[in-house]
Length: 133
Image (cartoon, rainbow, N blue to C red):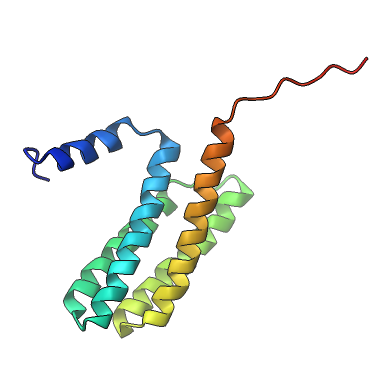
């Protein structure tokens, strides 16, 4: 990363100052971005670039899996979903299959949007509970 580039400095600072929740959202955003770039590269018949973008998406899925605490049931369910996404990305890369990329993209967008909404809800001020008389 070129540190004399103001945008690169901003991105680096964003990562270093982000909360764990925001970092997860950044990962989801990156996953969506790289899948879309891979799709575009396949459409343009630039298979080398498609490979690079899919590998980046695979790396993000691997990172998401590494953050899970598997003592919780929801984490186990996410792990299975991430495993499926990773396998589908590998298969899409081998076969340059845009349909499989589309399926993973749909899941990634849904996870991203759900996570984004959860962050918003968690940041809302708590309403005082009324005391029953």
